[in-house]
Image 1 (spheres, helix red, strand yellow):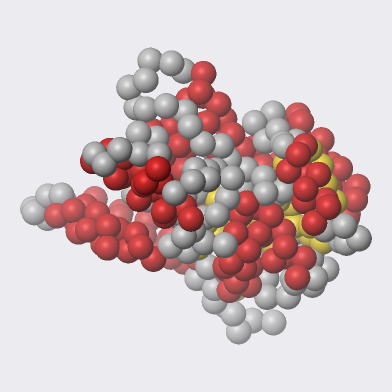
Image 2 (tube, rainbow, N blue to C red):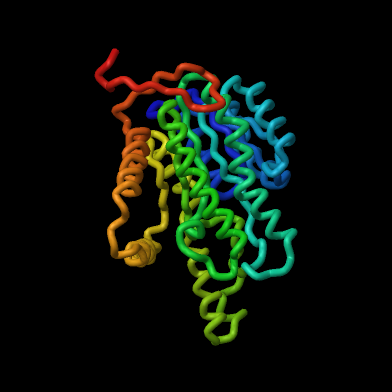
Length: 315
């Protein structure tokens, strides 16, 4: 979707942080934007910041509540008529550790961070498909969905789930002319992590654990500007890129993890039947993502995907 002028975006968690950065970046492209958020205070601040802009509509919603989210989507359609871009961005922190005996906080994190992505996609993807104009879906994961985050098992699990879902969704929607991007931010200046107002040296003792916390606060202070994250998302939509990575400091750890993964494979060759099937599966996945193929959608609103392909040189 290289031309975003006049297109409509629906952004969950859109009134603060990265979501608001997306909203501002998309409005700058001439898009109409529906900002959906749970927090009334965030909505009020965003409304004040965008006062006088007739291309934005606000709606309060809980992405973990399917009926509530559907009502928000319906309101978006009433406001602007269509939805071309869905940004599944709403998220919460916390949830406890991997062996924490409590369930409620863990369940809440999974319901919002992953359930919100699932609910948003299942409600909006059929709308985008039925319009037949192409579109794009952005799923906000995290670098915590790429590398382990100590002590945040629920958050990490939810973000790994978003990443896996987005990768599968990408292959399913590509033949329909609908792109998918997965945003994996690291330290960003959002409300998810609040450094103490005073310098950390005044609040922490000089032991190993507190050195870690001081480094964490310093990283938060040096975080990415949410507007820059929003611009990176817009660029990914325009160029149909899946990965949106904003924090280079994770590169070496990702390389190390990939080497460790490669080294864990068995040394002996796989039986031919398994190798042949895997080659076919990989080829199919790449063919679905190949931009040279143009889809022939036999049904505008499909429950399953029924597709044919024609060469990019065809009329």
